[in-house]
Length: 434
Figure 1 (spheres, rainbow, N blue to C red):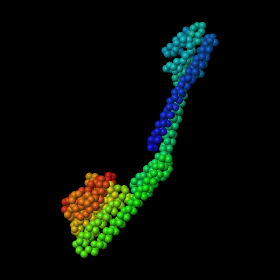
Figure 2 (cartoon, helix red, strand yellow):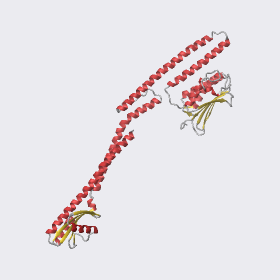
Figure 3 (spheres, rainbow, N blue to C red):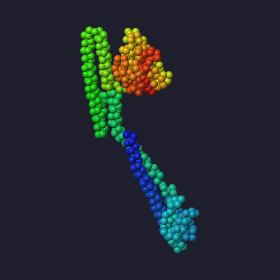
Figure 4 (tube, one colour):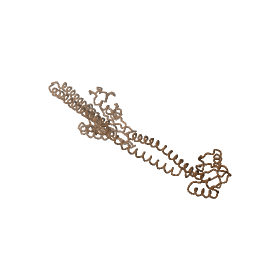
Protein backbone atom coordinates (compact mmCIF):
# COMPACT_ATOMS: atom_id res chain seq x y z
CA UNK A 1 0.00 0.00 0.00
CA UNK A 2 2.80 2.41 0.92
CA UNK A 3 4.51 1.92 -2.42
CA UNK A 4 1.28 2.39 -4.34
CA UNK A 5 0.52 5.64 -2.56
CA UNK A 6 4.01 6.97 -3.27
CA UNK A 7 3.79 5.96 -6.94
CA UNK A 8 0.34 7.52 -7.28
CA UNK A 9 1.44 10.86 -5.82
CA UNK A 10 4.66 10.84 -7.86
CA UNK A 11 2.76 10.12 -11.08
CA UNK A 12 0.13 12.77 -10.36
CA UNK A 13 2.72 15.39 -9.45
CA UNK A 14 4.81 14.54 -12.51
CA UNK A 15 1.78 14.95 -14.78
CA UNK A 16 0.94 18.33 -13.25
CA UNK A 17 4.54 19.55 -13.41
CA UNK A 18 5.00 18.41 -17.01
CA UNK A 19 1.68 19.99 -17.96
CA UNK A 20 2.97 23.25 -16.47
CA UNK A 21 6.57 23.08 -17.77
CA UNK A 22 5.84 22.42 -21.43
CA UNK A 23 3.69 25.54 -21.97
CA UNK A 24 6.13 27.57 -19.86
CA UNK A 25 9.12 26.51 -21.98
CA UNK A 26 7.20 27.27 -25.17
CA UNK A 27 6.28 30.68 -23.75
CA UNK A 28 9.93 31.44 -22.96
CA UNK A 29 10.97 30.51 -26.50
CA UNK A 30 8.21 32.69 -28.00
CA UNK A 31 9.14 35.62 -25.75
CA UNK A 32 12.76 35.32 -26.83
CA UNK A 33 11.74 35.35 -30.50
CA UNK A 34 9.41 38.31 -29.97
CA UNK A 35 12.18 40.18 -28.17
CA UNK A 36 14.65 39.58 -30.99
CA UNK A 37 12.09 40.46 -33.67
CA UNK A 38 11.12 43.71 -31.92
CA UNK A 39 14.75 44.70 -31.49
CA UNK A 40 15.55 44.02 -35.13
CA UNK A 41 12.55 46.00 -36.36
CA UNK A 42 13.48 48.98 -34.20
CA UNK A 43 17.03 49.03 -35.58
CA UNK A 44 15.83 48.59 -39.14
CA UNK A 45 13.30 51.41 -38.80
CA UNK A 46 15.98 53.64 -37.28
CA UNK A 47 18.33 53.12 -40.23
CA UNK A 48 15.46 53.54 -42.67
CA UNK A 49 14.85 56.95 -41.16
CA UNK A 50 18.52 57.88 -41.58
CA UNK A 51 18.49 57.06 -45.30
CA UNK A 52 16.17 59.96 -46.00
CA UNK A 53 18.13 62.45 -43.87
CA UNK A 54 21.77 61.51 -44.55
CA UNK A 55 23.02 63.09 -47.79
CA UNK A 56 25.90 60.76 -48.69
CA UNK A 57 26.85 57.10 -48.35
CA UNK A 58 29.94 57.83 -46.27
CA UNK A 59 27.94 59.35 -43.45
CA UNK A 60 25.31 56.60 -43.72
CA UNK A 61 28.02 53.92 -43.59
CA UNK A 62 29.44 55.48 -40.41
CA UNK A 63 25.99 55.53 -38.81
CA UNK A 64 25.28 51.91 -39.82
CA UNK A 65 28.65 50.81 -38.48
CA UNK A 66 27.95 52.54 -35.16
CA UNK A 67 24.54 50.87 -34.86
CA UNK A 68 26.00 47.46 -35.73
CA UNK A 69 28.63 47.78 -33.03
CA UNK A 70 25.81 48.36 -30.50
CA UNK A 71 24.41 44.85 -31.05
CA UNK A 72 22.68 43.95 -34.31
CA UNK A 73 24.17 43.56 -37.77
CA UNK A 74 22.60 46.20 -40.07
CA UNK A 75 23.00 46.15 -43.83
CA UNK A 76 21.67 48.64 -46.39
CA UNK A 77 21.15 47.48 -49.96
CA UNK A 78 20.94 50.45 -52.30
CA UNK A 79 18.72 50.51 -55.34
CA UNK A 80 21.80 50.03 -57.52
CA UNK A 81 22.76 46.90 -55.42
CA UNK A 82 25.58 48.67 -53.57
CA UNK A 83 26.02 47.34 -50.01
CA UNK A 84 26.55 49.45 -46.89
CA UNK A 85 27.55 47.66 -43.69
CA UNK A 86 28.30 44.25 -45.30
CA UNK A 87 30.50 42.97 -48.09
CA UNK A 88 28.12 40.28 -49.36
CA UNK A 89 24.67 38.80 -48.92
CA UNK A 90 23.51 35.20 -48.66
CA UNK A 91 21.08 33.77 -51.18
CA UNK A 92 18.28 33.75 -48.59
CA UNK A 93 18.91 37.40 -47.80
CA UNK A 94 18.89 38.38 -51.50
CA UNK A 95 15.54 36.62 -51.81
CA UNK A 96 14.24 38.71 -48.88
CA UNK A 97 15.50 41.89 -50.59
CA UNK A 98 13.69 41.07 -53.81
CA UNK A 99 10.51 40.36 -51.86
CA UNK A 100 10.74 43.72 -50.03
CA UNK A 101 11.19 45.63 -53.28
CA UNK A 102 8.24 43.83 -54.78
CA UNK A 103 5.78 44.10 -51.88
CA UNK A 104 7.02 47.47 -50.54
CA UNK A 105 6.11 46.15 -47.00
CA UNK A 106 8.38 45.53 -43.98
CA UNK A 107 8.56 41.94 -42.68
CA UNK A 108 10.72 39.57 -40.66
CA UNK A 109 12.20 36.26 -41.79
CA UNK A 110 13.78 33.49 -39.80
CA UNK A 111 16.77 32.10 -41.70
CA UNK A 112 19.66 29.76 -40.96
CA UNK A 113 21.93 32.56 -39.76
CA UNK A 114 19.31 34.17 -37.54
CA UNK A 115 16.33 36.51 -37.72
CA UNK A 116 16.17 39.29 -40.37
CA UNK A 117 13.98 42.39 -40.08
CA UNK A 118 13.58 43.75 -43.64
CA UNK A 119 12.34 47.34 -44.25
CA UNK A 120 12.04 48.80 -47.77
CA UNK A 121 12.69 52.57 -48.23
CA UNK A 122 11.55 54.38 -51.38
CA UNK A 123 13.98 57.06 -52.61
CA UNK A 124 14.44 59.08 -55.78
CA UNK A 125 16.92 56.48 -57.05
CA UNK A 126 14.60 53.51 -56.41
CA UNK A 127 13.90 51.21 -53.45
CA UNK A 128 16.61 50.80 -50.84
CA UNK A 129 16.31 47.88 -48.40
CA UNK A 130 17.45 47.91 -44.77
CA UNK A 131 18.21 44.53 -43.18
CA UNK A 132 18.70 44.22 -39.40
CA UNK A 133 19.94 40.74 -38.48
CA UNK A 134 19.81 39.10 -35.05
CA UNK A 135 22.22 36.10 -34.99
CA UNK A 136 20.81 32.72 -33.92
CA UNK A 137 22.82 32.68 -30.69
CA UNK A 138 21.47 36.07 -29.75
CA UNK A 139 17.87 35.14 -30.57
CA UNK A 140 17.92 32.31 -28.01
CA UNK A 141 20.06 34.13 -25.49
CA UNK A 142 19.01 33.18 -21.94
CA UNK A 143 16.49 30.56 -23.11
CA UNK A 144 18.53 27.42 -22.12
CA UNK A 145 19.26 28.84 -18.67
CA UNK A 146 15.61 29.73 -18.10
CA UNK A 147 14.41 26.29 -19.25
CA UNK A 148 17.04 24.58 -17.06
CA UNK A 149 15.93 26.59 -14.05
CA UNK A 150 12.27 25.78 -14.59
CA UNK A 151 12.96 22.06 -15.12
CA UNK A 152 15.08 21.98 -11.96
CA UNK A 153 12.26 23.56 -9.98
CA UNK A 154 9.84 21.02 -11.46
CA UNK A 155 12.14 18.12 -10.52
CA UNK A 156 12.46 19.47 -6.98
CA UNK A 157 8.68 19.70 -6.75
CA UNK A 158 8.33 16.05 -7.83
CA UNK A 159 10.98 14.90 -5.35
CA UNK A 160 9.44 16.95 -2.55
CA UNK A 161 5.95 15.63 -3.29
CA UNK A 162 7.30 12.05 -3.38
CA UNK A 163 9.02 12.44 -0.02
CA UNK A 164 5.91 14.00 1.47
CA UNK A 165 3.79 11.17 0.06
CA UNK A 166 6.19 8.65 1.54
CA UNK A 167 5.78 10.15 4.99
CA UNK A 168 2.02 10.32 4.56
CA UNK A 169 1.90 6.71 3.35
CA UNK A 170 3.96 5.65 6.34
CA UNK A 171 1.49 7.29 8.70
CA UNK A 172 -1.37 5.55 6.91
CA UNK A 173 0.19 2.09 6.51
CA UNK A 174 2.10 1.78 9.81
CA UNK A 175 -1.09 1.20 11.87
CA UNK A 176 -2.24 -1.39 9.33
CA UNK A 177 1.14 -3.13 9.48
CA UNK A 178 0.95 -3.13 13.28
CA UNK A 179 -2.50 -4.74 13.14
CA UNK A 180 -1.15 -7.37 10.73
CA UNK A 181 1.76 -8.07 13.08
CA UNK A 182 -0.69 -8.57 15.94
CA UNK A 183 -2.70 -10.96 13.78
CA UNK A 184 0.47 -12.96 13.07
CA UNK A 185 1.24 -13.11 16.80
CA UNK A 186 -2.26 -14.43 17.45
CA UNK A 187 -1.80 -17.02 14.70
CA UNK A 188 1.43 -18.17 16.35
CA UNK A 189 -0.43 -18.75 19.62
CA UNK A 190 0.24 -15.53 21.56
CA UNK A 191 -3.36 -15.02 22.56
CA UNK A 192 -2.53 -12.11 24.86
CA UNK A 193 -1.44 -9.99 21.88
CA UNK A 194 -3.59 -6.95 21.22
CA UNK A 195 -3.49 -4.40 18.42
CA UNK A 196 -2.90 -0.74 19.23
CA UNK A 197 -6.03 1.24 18.40
CA UNK A 198 -4.97 4.28 16.39
CA UNK A 199 -4.53 5.76 12.92
CA UNK A 200 -7.26 6.38 10.34
CA UNK A 201 -10.86 5.51 11.26
CA UNK A 202 -10.76 2.35 9.12
CA UNK A 203 -7.62 1.14 10.89
CA UNK A 204 -9.15 1.92 14.28
CA UNK A 205 -12.20 -0.18 13.37
CA UNK A 206 -9.97 -3.03 12.14
CA UNK A 207 -7.86 -3.02 15.32
CA UNK A 208 -10.94 -2.93 17.49
CA UNK A 209 -12.49 -5.88 15.63
CA UNK A 210 -9.24 -7.88 15.88
CA UNK A 211 -8.98 -7.25 19.62
CA UNK A 212 -12.59 -8.32 20.09
CA UNK A 213 -11.89 -11.48 18.10
CA UNK A 214 -8.85 -12.26 20.25
CA UNK A 215 -10.87 -11.83 23.42
CA UNK A 216 -13.58 -14.07 22.01
CA UNK A 217 -10.99 -16.75 21.18
CA UNK A 218 -9.63 -16.59 24.73
CA UNK A 219 -13.15 -16.95 26.15
CA UNK A 220 -13.85 -19.95 23.94
CA UNK A 221 -10.56 -21.61 24.87
CA UNK A 222 -11.17 -21.03 28.57
CA UNK A 223 -14.59 -22.57 28.23
CA UNK A 224 -13.11 -25.53 26.35
CA UNK A 225 -10.51 -26.04 29.08
CA UNK A 226 -13.27 -26.15 31.65
CA UNK A 227 -15.29 -28.65 29.62
CA UNK A 228 -12.23 -30.87 29.11
CA UNK A 229 -11.38 -30.77 32.81
CA UNK A 230 -14.99 -31.55 33.65
CA UNK A 231 -14.96 -34.40 31.13
CA UNK A 232 -11.91 -35.95 32.75
CA UNK A 233 -13.42 -35.62 36.19
CA UNK A 234 -16.79 -37.05 35.14
CA UNK A 235 -15.24 -40.05 33.40
CA UNK A 236 -12.59 -40.96 35.94
CA UNK A 237 -15.02 -41.04 38.87
CA UNK A 238 -17.20 -43.91 37.55
CA UNK A 239 -14.09 -45.75 36.33
CA UNK A 240 -12.66 -45.61 39.85
CA UNK A 241 -15.95 -46.92 41.20
CA UNK A 242 -15.83 -49.79 38.71
CA UNK A 243 -12.30 -50.65 39.75
CA UNK A 244 -13.35 -50.74 43.39
CA UNK A 245 -16.34 -52.91 42.54
CA UNK A 246 -14.07 -55.36 40.76
CA UNK A 247 -12.49 -56.17 44.10
CA UNK A 248 -15.85 -57.50 45.29
CA UNK A 249 -16.09 -60.18 42.59
CA UNK A 250 -15.35 -63.61 44.02
CA UNK A 251 -14.47 -65.29 40.73
CA UNK A 252 -10.80 -64.48 40.12
CA UNK A 253 -11.05 -65.09 36.37
CA UNK A 254 -14.05 -62.81 35.97
CA UNK A 255 -12.48 -60.23 38.27
CA UNK A 256 -9.30 -60.30 36.19
CA UNK A 257 -11.16 -59.76 32.94
CA UNK A 258 -13.23 -57.02 34.55
CA UNK A 259 -10.11 -55.21 35.79
CA UNK A 260 -8.53 -55.58 32.36
CA UNK A 261 -11.56 -53.95 30.75
CA UNK A 262 -11.50 -51.19 33.37
CA UNK A 263 -7.79 -50.56 32.71
CA UNK A 264 -8.48 -50.44 28.99
CA UNK A 265 -11.34 -47.99 29.61
CA UNK A 266 -9.02 -45.84 31.74
CA UNK A 267 -6.39 -45.71 29.00
CA UNK A 268 -9.03 -44.80 26.44
CA UNK A 269 -10.31 -42.00 28.67
CA UNK A 270 -6.77 -40.69 29.14
CA UNK A 271 -6.28 -40.67 25.36
CA UNK A 272 -9.57 -38.85 24.81
CA UNK A 273 -8.76 -36.20 27.41
CA UNK A 274 -5.23 -35.63 26.10
CA UNK A 275 -6.51 -35.43 22.56
CA UNK A 276 -9.16 -32.88 23.58
CA UNK A 277 -6.63 -30.78 25.46
CA UNK A 278 -4.45 -30.59 22.38
CA UNK A 279 -6.74 -28.02 20.82
CA UNK A 280 -6.22 -25.49 23.60
CA UNK A 281 -2.44 -25.36 23.71
CA UNK A 282 -0.80 -22.00 23.15
CA UNK A 283 2.24 -23.32 21.37
CA UNK A 284 1.21 -23.75 17.76
CA UNK A 285 4.60 -23.50 16.12
CA UNK A 286 4.73 -26.79 14.27
CA UNK A 287 8.40 -27.76 14.19
CA UNK A 288 10.46 -30.31 16.11
CA UNK A 289 13.49 -32.58 15.87
CA UNK A 290 12.34 -36.19 15.56
CA UNK A 291 15.71 -37.53 16.69
CA UNK A 292 15.65 -35.42 19.86
CA UNK A 293 12.08 -36.48 20.68
CA UNK A 294 12.90 -40.15 20.07
CA UNK A 295 16.00 -39.96 22.25
CA UNK A 296 14.04 -38.31 25.06
CA UNK A 297 11.17 -40.84 24.97
CA UNK A 298 13.43 -43.87 24.77
CA UNK A 299 15.31 -42.61 27.83
CA UNK A 300 11.98 -42.17 29.61
CA UNK A 301 10.72 -45.69 28.79
CA UNK A 302 14.07 -47.44 29.34
CA UNK A 303 13.68 -48.02 33.12
CA UNK A 304 10.33 -49.80 32.57
CA UNK A 305 11.87 -51.86 29.76
CA UNK A 306 14.69 -52.95 32.07
CA UNK A 307 12.19 -53.92 34.77
CA UNK A 308 10.36 -56.13 32.27
CA UNK A 309 13.51 -57.60 30.84
CA UNK A 310 12.98 -55.96 27.45
CA UNK A 311 15.64 -54.76 25.06
CA UNK A 312 14.76 -51.21 24.01
CA UNK A 313 17.11 -49.90 21.31
CA UNK A 314 17.32 -46.53 19.62
CA UNK A 315 18.96 -46.30 16.18
CA UNK A 316 19.45 -42.90 14.50
CA UNK A 317 20.74 -42.63 10.93
CA UNK A 318 21.76 -39.17 9.78
CA UNK A 319 21.45 -38.11 6.18
CA UNK A 320 24.78 -37.63 4.41
CA UNK A 321 23.52 -34.39 2.87
CA UNK A 322 23.40 -32.69 6.26
CA UNK A 323 19.58 -32.43 6.42
CA UNK A 324 18.30 -32.51 9.99
CA UNK A 325 15.48 -34.71 11.27
CA UNK A 326 13.10 -31.74 11.60
CA UNK A 327 9.46 -32.08 10.60
CA UNK A 328 6.41 -29.80 10.63
CA UNK A 329 4.91 -31.28 13.80
CA UNK A 330 4.60 -30.00 17.33
CA UNK A 331 7.01 -31.59 19.82
CA UNK A 332 4.17 -32.32 22.25
CA UNK A 333 2.15 -34.01 19.49
CA UNK A 334 5.09 -36.10 18.36
CA UNK A 335 5.95 -37.04 21.95
CA UNK A 336 2.42 -38.28 22.53
CA UNK A 337 2.38 -40.15 19.22
CA UNK A 338 5.65 -41.92 20.00
CA UNK A 339 4.44 -42.67 23.53
CA UNK A 340 1.31 -44.24 22.03
CA UNK A 341 3.39 -46.55 19.83
CA UNK A 342 5.75 -47.57 22.64
CA UNK A 343 2.90 -47.91 25.13
CA UNK A 344 1.04 -50.22 22.74
CA UNK A 345 4.14 -52.38 22.48
CA UNK A 346 4.42 -52.58 26.26
CA UNK A 347 0.68 -53.16 26.76
CA UNK A 348 0.06 -55.81 24.10
CA UNK A 349 3.30 -57.80 24.06
CA UNK A 350 4.64 -60.11 26.69
CA UNK A 351 7.39 -59.08 29.07
CA UNK A 352 10.84 -59.68 27.65
CA UNK A 353 9.80 -58.90 24.06
CA UNK A 354 12.31 -56.57 22.39
CA UNK A 355 11.47 -53.11 21.03
CA UNK A 356 13.32 -51.02 18.49
CA UNK A 357 12.95 -47.31 17.66
CA UNK A 358 14.65 -46.06 14.48
CA UNK A 359 15.01 -42.54 13.04
CA UNK A 360 16.17 -42.33 9.44
CA UNK A 361 16.73 -39.19 7.35
CA UNK A 362 16.86 -40.07 3.69
CA UNK A 363 16.34 -38.05 0.51
CA UNK A 364 14.36 -35.24 2.15
CA UNK A 365 12.21 -37.55 4.29
CA UNK A 366 12.28 -38.32 8.00
CA UNK A 367 11.25 -41.90 8.77
CA UNK A 368 10.33 -42.86 12.35
CA UNK A 369 9.90 -46.61 12.91
CA UNK A 370 8.76 -48.44 16.06
CA UNK A 371 8.82 -52.25 15.87
CA UNK A 372 8.52 -55.09 18.35
CA UNK A 373 8.68 -58.86 18.54
CA UNK A 374 5.05 -59.38 19.46
CA UNK A 375 2.18 -60.93 17.51
CA UNK A 376 1.68 -57.85 15.34
CA UNK A 377 -1.55 -56.13 14.26
CA UNK A 378 -3.61 -55.83 11.08
CA UNK A 379 -2.68 -53.09 8.60
CA UNK A 380 -5.94 -51.17 9.27
CA UNK A 381 -5.25 -50.94 13.00
CA UNK A 382 -4.63 -47.24 12.71
CA UNK A 383 -8.35 -46.74 12.19
CA UNK A 384 -10.30 -46.17 15.40
CA UNK A 385 -11.80 -49.34 16.83
CA UNK A 386 -9.75 -51.77 14.67
CA UNK A 387 -6.73 -52.62 16.73
CA UNK A 388 -7.26 -56.33 16.77
CA UNK A 389 -5.59 -56.67 20.18
CA UNK A 390 -8.51 -55.82 22.41
CA UNK A 391 -7.79 -52.09 22.06
CA UNK A 392 -10.02 -49.38 20.65
CA UNK A 393 -7.27 -48.29 18.29
CA UNK A 394 -7.48 -44.72 19.64
CA UNK A 395 -3.73 -44.50 20.21
CA UNK A 396 -2.88 -45.43 16.62
CA UNK A 397 -5.57 -43.04 15.40
CA UNK A 398 -3.83 -40.22 17.30
CA UNK A 399 -0.51 -41.25 15.75
CA UNK A 400 -2.02 -41.16 12.28
CA UNK A 401 -3.48 -37.71 12.89
CA UNK A 402 -0.13 -36.31 14.06
CA UNK A 403 1.75 -37.83 11.12
CA UNK A 404 -0.76 -36.67 8.52
CA UNK A 405 -0.74 -33.22 10.13
CA UNK A 406 2.99 -33.07 9.37
CA UNK A 407 2.33 -33.98 5.74
CA UNK A 408 3.35 -37.62 6.15
CA UNK A 409 1.88 -41.10 6.15
CA UNK A 410 1.61 -43.91 8.70
CA UNK A 411 1.94 -47.53 7.62
CA UNK A 412 1.71 -50.74 9.64
CA UNK A 413 3.33 -54.00 8.73
CA UNK A 414 5.44 -56.92 9.83
CA UNK A 415 8.87 -56.21 11.29
CA UNK A 416 11.60 -57.90 9.31
CA UNK A 417 14.11 -57.74 12.17
CA UNK A 418 11.93 -58.57 15.20
CA UNK A 419 8.95 -60.30 13.58
CA UNK A 420 6.23 -58.29 15.30
CA UNK A 421 4.39 -55.07 14.48
CA UNK A 422 6.20 -52.36 12.59
CA UNK A 423 4.67 -48.86 12.72
CA UNK A 424 6.43 -46.51 10.33
CA UNK A 425 5.77 -42.76 10.08
CA UNK A 426 7.22 -41.03 7.01
CA UNK A 427 7.21 -37.21 7.00
CA UNK A 428 8.89 -34.62 4.74
CA UNK A 429 11.96 -33.03 6.33
CA UNK A 430 12.03 -29.28 6.82
CA UNK A 431 14.59 -27.60 4.58
CA UNK A 432 17.17 -25.17 5.94
CA UNK A 433 17.39 -26.64 9.44
CA UNK A 434 20.64 -28.59 10.01
